[in-house]
Length: 134
Image 1 (cartoon, helix red, strand yellow):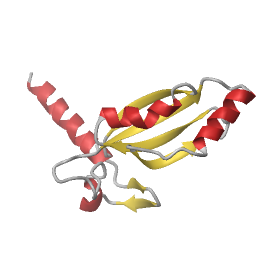
Image 2: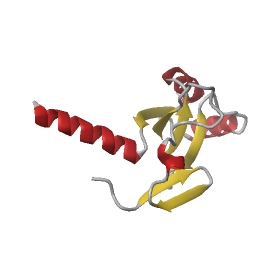
Image 3: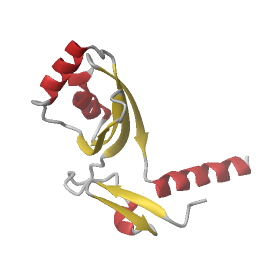
């Protein structure tokens, strides 16, 4: 069942209300090459080295870092300072790995591909319908 009200995140806005076609394919980027679909990943991380030296080194590198090739759609640190969360669009798992690679000495990552809720609900509904026929 799809809720009556759905929230849609865009990098600078939060939309509330009924789903609209313009948000149905949020995982596709307008500037992507024709026929190329971007994937959206939910990425969390925890710091491996919480020492003062480790923090200073990672902050020094972070101040010079240019993210990519994945594009950050949301980027937050946890209030307790233990890690953070991001929504990253990437054209491949390889591009996601390249985006995270500079930080592997400092961070432990967990990544999950995600879908807009309407698409996820439709897939779940189709799977349930198939199971009912078996």
